[in-house]
Each structure stands twice: as structure tokens, then as C-alpha cells.
Length: 323
Image (tube, rainbow, N blue to C red; front, side, top):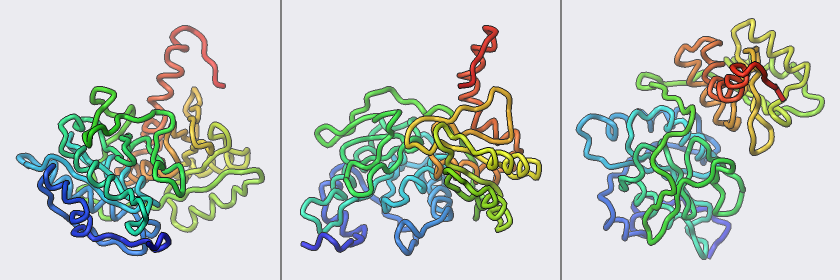
């Protein structure tokens, strides 16, 4: 047993090691070229997967029950999130992978693979948006993130919780089907490349010149992890205001793992990304810019659901608070 050698299993090996899966579903395997591990991927992968899935899975008359994506865990949530926002049908799309190598004493990839297939063919998995199946748990792709660099129970939706779990090899959902609040859809059937959006990390002494440097290097938008509830420094706010006047959007997300930024009651030059993480906000911003959204439309995309929930009742009652 070599616990340090990360063997990338071929699809034939995966199915051969989990032959029980053939009693659950008929499988068709499609391999999408990728190199350098999942850390070396870019948005072209999720565009290719989405376009293929829309043709084969979502086309009228398709007899395919669902699809699973077996992906390296370093950036699984990014590829899965991109596919989720661009898949135009109610059929299940399931993302899974493995934290432990197949040479380990107790590899998790085999169980995850079997459970992902079981979830994909289950009618109960429909009309929920994309799902991550990992370590006996089912979570929404829209809210899930990798929470631990090493342990098998890494993918979690910490605020929103699990949608279901596996019992006796079958998915059991705790809730009736529903899509995540504010989950958008983008048509990328004719898209081959997305615009550059750069993520910056906010901290004490943040150098706002990095924002201008990113734009000078070709960035069409910025995402900043702001301390606390996505709060930017005065210099970063000033730079965001200046860049807004030049047509460049800045989205701020909370630096803590959980929680949300608070949109201003009146729309401003900094857009707050609600409960999205930085990598998810980046993908939404890329897709919005690619779709030709104006700055106001982009702000509404990020802020309107939360702003309406927070401020609309208070305005109607004649009062509001912003902190």
C-alpha cells in the first residue's frame, strides 16, 4: 500500500472496482481532456461539459436519466458550480470525486462513485439544481465548498446544511425538491472562453494598487474577500468607485468561511455577493460579463434577493437598519 501515490483511476478501472454500479444503471462514459490535476484547470472545462450535457442530457427526447462528473477535489466545486449555472434542464447533475488515493487502505472514491450514480438515476434528485455527493452526504453545488484539505468529509454547505444522505445505498432527501434561492441560469451554448476576473484577498494594509494592476493586466472584473461581512478598506472602496466609473465591477465577498455581506440600502459601486464564496462569485461575474450584463444588472444579480429580503419590509414599515 502506497498512501502517498495518487493514482488517477481510469473509468474502466473505476467501473471494474465498483461492478455493483452496473446493477443500478447503464453507463456511458465521456472523458474530457484535462492535464496538470484539477488545480491546473480553467473555465473551458466546465463550458465543454455544460455544452455536451445540454445536448445529450437536456435535449428533447433524451432518455438519459442523469449525469455524474468525477473530478479532482482541488477545484471540483468550481467546475461543478459553472456547470450548474449553465445547465438548462431539471435532470440530476451530480459531482463527486475522491479524497483518498485508490491505493489507500480505505479509498473513498469507490463509494462516492456508486452513490453518485444512485443519486443520478433517482427521480427524487430532479428539480434541485446540481448536487455534490460525497461521504454519504448530498449537498447543493450552489452552496458547497471544500472545507478541509485532507479529510473525506470535506464538501459541505456549512450554513445551508445537507439536502440528504445515503441509507442502504440509496439517496434519502430531507426536503422536497427546490432550487437554491437566487440561482441564476446563463446560456453558454456559443461561448468558448470567459472574460478574466481576478480574486484579491483583503487584509490590514491592503494595497489598492493591486486592483488597478489586475485591470491593466486584462481583468474585466474583480472579486475581493473583504474582512468580516465583506468590508473593504477605504482605499479599496475608493478604487472600486473609480473602476466602477470606468465600467469595471468589483464584487466583495466575506473573508470568513460562513456568513454574508450586507448590501447597502441604496445601490453603490461595490457589489456584495450574499452567501457565495469568492470562487463562486468569480464564476457568476464571468458569466454575467460574458452575457453582456450592464453594471446595474450585475449588481442586481448579486444583491437584489438579499436586499429585498432585508430592506423591503423595513422600508414599507418606515424604518430600516444597515448593520
